[in-house]
Image 1 (tube, rainbow, N blue to C red):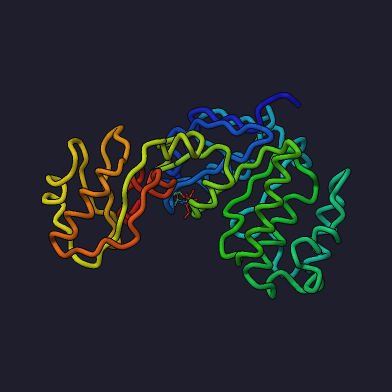
Image 2: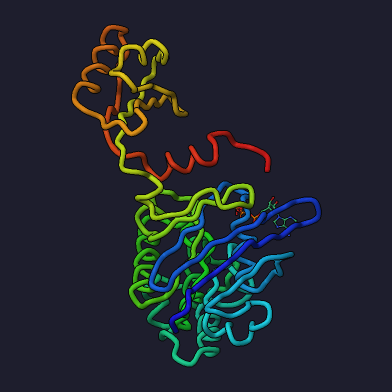
Length: 309
Ligand SMILES: Nc1ncnc2c1ncn2[C@@H]1O[C@H](COP(=O)(O)OP(=O)(O)OP(=O)(O)O)[C@@H](O)[C@H]1O
C-alpha cells in the first residue's frame, strides 16, 4: 500500500510525425489530487491513456500503484478507476444497468443506487447513455470511475460542461476520494477549479512538463496590482510614473498589470497608478491587488496566443 500512486519517468509517445509526449516525468501521491493542466493538444490525454494501459509509450517508465500498466493490466483493473474524456460508456447502455454492471466487477463497490442518487441520475437510470444530456453523461462516467472504490482514479476533464451544482457534487466526490487516501489524477481546463481542488499541479505544454508544484508555489507570494480600462493605456508613460522597479504591461482583454520582480505592492504604488490615470483621463476599473492567479501563471508559462501544436 505504501508505494506512490503514479510515477512516470521520461515517457515519450509519437503519433507518426507528432511528438505528443516528449519526455514527461511526474508523480502523483495517494491521498492527494494531482491536476494535469495544459493547452489543447499538450499531451495530457495521451499521458493518461498511457497510464491507463490503453496506449504503450515509445520509451520511458510508467508505474501505477507500483505496477506496469501494460504488463499488469489484469491486476490493476480492479484497483484503478478511469473516466475517459469520451465517457467510456456504450451508447446503448442504460445508466443504472451500466453502473450496476461495473459495480459487479468489484469486490466492495459503493452501492450503485446511492451513487446514482448522489449524482442526480436516479430519474434517468433507465435512459440509454446516448440519450442522456452531456452533463448526465459526464456524471455517469464519473460514477463508473469511482463505484469500485479504486485506490487511484484518472479523471479526464471530469467537470467539463457541468452546471455549477453538478460541478460542486463532482468536487465533493473528489475531496472524499482524497480523504479516503485515493490518488486522484485529473485534467481540467478550469484553472480556478485546479487552484481550489488540487494539492499539486503539473503544467504540460507541447508534450513536456513546463512546471510542477502546489498551486501556491506556482502562483508565488508576490502581489501585483491589476486594473482594466476601456481606453488605451500608454504603458511606457505609466511605467515612468511608477515607483522604482515597477513596470506596467498589458494582458488580454483590456487588462493591465503592474508589478516588480520581488517587489511588494504598497499604498504608494496604488497612489501613483491612480494619479497617473487621473492625469490622463483614464478610468481604471476593477482595480485590485492580489497574488497572481493560477490562470496568470498558466498563461505566462504557456503563452497567451491560441496556436497550432
Ligand atoms: N490517435 C492519435 N493519432 C494521431 N495524433 C494524435 C492521436 N491522439 C492525439 N494525437 C495528437 O497528439 C497531441 C496530443 O494530444 P492529446 O489528446 O494528448 O492532448 P490534450 O492535452 O489531452 O488536449 P485537450 O486538452 O485538447 O484534450 C495532439 O497534437 C493530438 O493532435
